[in-house]
Length: 139
Image 1 (cartoon, rainbow, N blue to C red):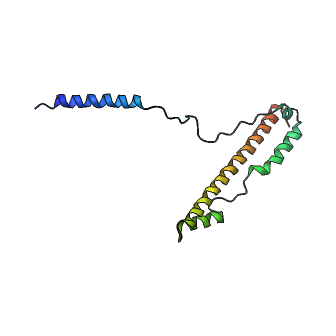
Image 2 (image 1 turned 90 degrees about the vertical axis):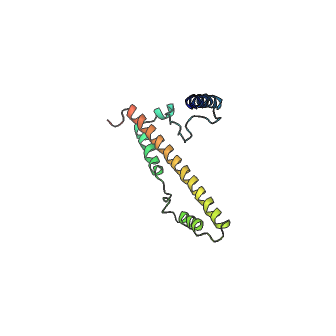
Image 3 (image 1 turned 120 degrees about the horizontal axis):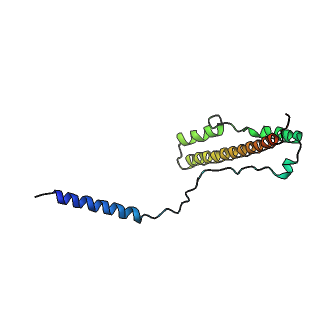
């Protein structure tokens, strides 16, 4: 018995079914745009362009302390250490483990909010510096 025609027939059917399966798959309703946070671009207004070089420099100086975070890092935060210990050394699984996981989620959200705040301040400072360079301040 010759199995070669049977093999060719099965390969042909597999190819046809693969093409039909690909064509039958609808596009997911998920947007294909970036899913990560994209900060809005800070644009200078006419009011900012009317400020003097000294005023622009003062605005940058007053924003400088907000460039930094004063929240401790994940491993340096004592509350995160306690939450992790509650998860790992859990004697009452439902109560302590869930409380630890909930706190770690909350801590992550606070960290994300802090990062976004610092990014907005950096963008404002960059915008003020751009206006200063366009006005040829302190040359």
